[in-house]
Image (cartoon, rainbow, N blue to C red; front, side, top):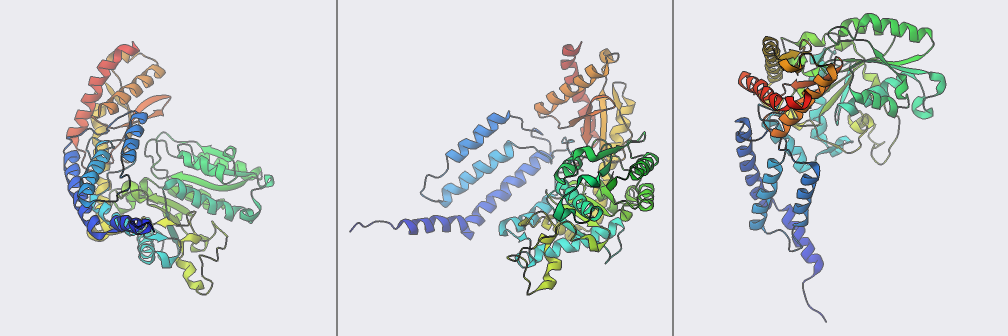
Length: 507
């Protein structure tokens, strides 16, 4: 008879070490030390903003850590802590440092670290949702936040409904799925028919996820009709009315009008009141993509930008944008509560208990594409509960004000050109060195793109690019509330310096 260690017992020992509260406590202490030091360093701009490496280099490095994992002895606490520090340190050293005030890039904020702490509660304990009994507190948190943000937008308590989902793209898709099902009765079961001749009228600068939604929903991207913009890149209500009249005269079924509150290219806010007037008069579903601009509901200075949103049939807002909480946490609001179950019309008896039919009202799986859904709102709930909703108004006011200051600085400089008046915290501009003043727009646009590429690879700043008014341009989103005038002045000087080094390639 062969004696030796029981393999199953060894497996249980290794598993127990991974789940040990003592192990977690030791590593959590290291986690706190590392992140505290990291946040202090990046908020003081002592690191690169973007730690740039070519993708294959990073992929190979990540793979080396995987290949160097424990070969089978199990977790030794002493070695594990050092290994954890090495792994976490490498992740921090190779990432994008959003908390650096020189991060002025995409519409992704440095979340409040406090919100991150609350978010981790749901992550570590894996609070998931679909049915209430799997995530009772997560469901309660979500519903309480929906009520309060919806009322801040202007919806009347008790008359509206909402849900939280994973990102603005999925939120827009869910809302437009509801609009499609309401407009084309029975299409959830039978599909969109050629006879429907559907049309989706969208703001010309609408996010590309709207076109994706049209394809996914069976409407087809050819069904999209772009509503012209005014001189501030907002939807033109007069042109919208003409489009809707023409479509209805042609017998086409308009699924929805998609307006924007904080359009991605320039942050423009459409005039929602006159758009609502037109949609109500023509009996068309009005949807507002307020993924970026929904936070203005909490600002006394800027709430007017959302005036009319409460008349929209659906609105989406991202808390992981202007409410500065960890991604992803996107809200969908329906003006009429009866639409809350119109997106999906299926049964799942293994999830939804017929012995407790009242629970379905709180089973979010009936309203979302996700079945298993993470508790996305813990971070927002904790930050709001600690600091109050006025904090979100402060964050909007500070970032919007700094964008206006950048605009003034660009106007005062003879080698920069702002391309629009900022309505929010997004600003598009070009660098115009004297020697390129007479260059055509293609050359000037390519020059700006190349300067931007070199700038972000240097690690000194992070900004983005976009085409606007016929050519490439630089784009800033002031998503870091710690960014000040000093960083903005340094940004312009860095662009000038890199521009001088780049100029020879374009002359």
